[in-house]
Image (cartoon, rainbow, N blue to C red; front, side, top):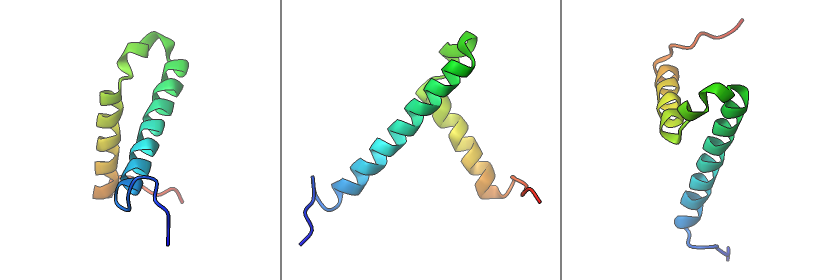
Length: 67
């Protein structure tokens, strides 16, 4: 019988939330180090919006493959 930290459903949701928040924090830190003069522009909302736009472009097939 498997042992769950929280529950069978909440454990994957918790893991996904932790992964997404870690990715946002790393992207924000990397961008602030790369462009210190624009540090105030890199908020979680801005990162989420940009990520959503890129995901939408990928879903629509707008990215070209490199061959």
